Amino acid sequence: MAFRAACPACNCAGEYDLLHSLKQTELGWQLFCELCGESVIHFSTEEKEQIFKAMQLTKEYVPDVINAYGELNVKELSSRVAFGAIAKKETEDKA
Ligand SMILES: [Zn+2]
Image (cartoon, rainbow, N blue to C red; front, side, top):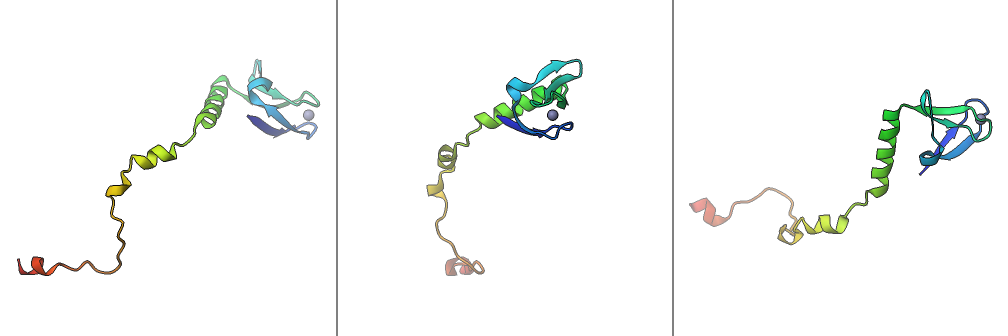
C-alpha cells in the first residue's frame, strides 16, 4: 500500500511503501526522504502497529453483498407500495 508524503526539508513528494520503508530508530519508526535522507514522519511502535493493522483490515475487507442480501429473506417482505391513510376494512368496523 503506497503512502504519499512530502519531505519537510527538500519538499520532494515521495511515494513510499510503508511496510518496507519504515526504519526503527531511537525515536520509534521513521520514514526517510528518498532524495535527501531527512526524516519525513515518525511513529511510535504502538502507532505503527495500529496503522499496519488498519491497512491489513482495509486490504482484506471485501463486502459479501450477495450473501448479505440472501440472509434478508426478501421474498417474505411486502412488494406492495401504497400512499395515504390506512383505512379499516368494513368487517373490522362492525366488530
Ligand atoms: Zn528530502
